[in-house]
Image (cartoon, rainbow over the protein chains, first blue to last red):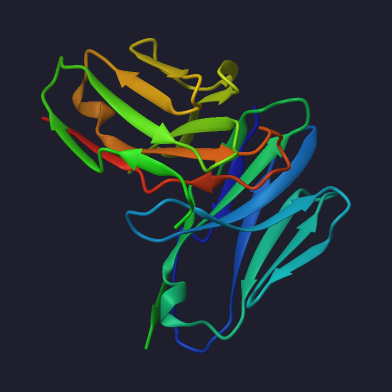
Length: 112
Length: 114
């Protein structure tokens, strides 16, 4: 069964600090992995999309990594800002399927 | 603003009732996805349409149905509502409905079933 597990479930950090969120998946065959940011009560917004051949992809202060061998991805946030407070969701698409598998998300709170 | 619109923003109804949620994709996008997000389940894929045709179906209950119209807007119909159907319902759109495309999500419809 295709599954996506995210850790930690929640995280509290101080403004200006870095943090790393984890995503492990068992989706097979792998097509692509995305990270979304979702502010409370709003629709998710795509941060990065990574395919099998990509190891790292950046979007401003967000850097995603992918290890297709171990089926792990991470999202690193640099110099966090208050506006980074949100839920971060990892989504994996299987090859040959139009049905995505979602992680439960990591809730990040950035304190001043 | 993603360019995807959803109406209504909020909906309060009673168990057993039927509601219709509406989604207009971004201009030029042919594919629409519907998702349900509840507190205990997270985001779940319901169904995808491409240019008026159903392309993929996920964990969508038989009480739920959807369609995409010739003008490409989509409607999600929820009937015989139960308390557990209370959730945020999102639609997203892409140009061609391919897995590699970025999905643009609407602001969602918050449904409360009492």
